[in-house]
Length: 147
Image (cartoon, rainbow, N blue to C red; front, side, top):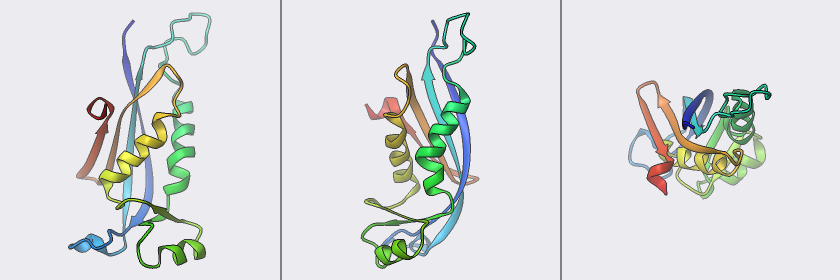
């Protein structure tokens, strides 16, 4: 049987600030993120099954990513938990996400990969997470390079 990769694209809006950064990104600013999630596996080979030929139902992948990432991070302000006023802001506004890392695009991609890796069906593996911060700038986490 052949291994196949499937990819689903997601879009969400978010804001963040990089604590103690020496450039403009130290200020609260927003992005229109594009997230590409790629999984790999063998297509189902059971002719009687309506999902015959699928690695994973795109609808299931969509639900998983929406539940784990999009619902939490869309239209959220993402701050490092030790950032000044992070606690007060998260108590006041329902869409403030505090994380234990500098919320760079790189760290967000790593975090998203960790959220998804253990949530996939047993016969499907996370291959990569590509996160665009701007239309011309992205980071990519690849499972094989993180073994």
